[in-house]
Image (cartoon, rainbow, N blue to C red; front, side):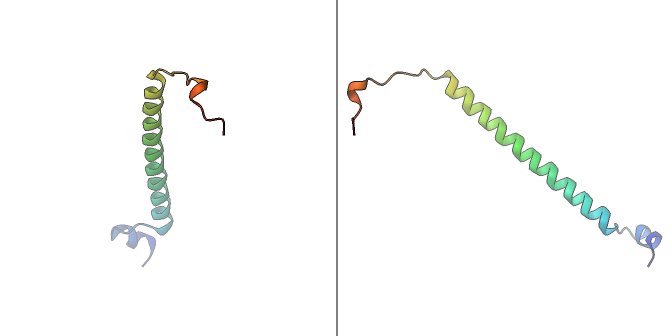
Length: 63
């Protein structure tokens, strides 16, 4: 079967198929990274909103 027959039968060439799979994986990985960064940003916003209270030195154990 030549290329024209493969295309008319609805088959995709392996090189095209692999590059499409690689592109989908990269897209999926970028979406995962973006979601993780958004979660981190929310965590940092929550931490920034909290008041930092000093710990009295008398309550610390020297060793």
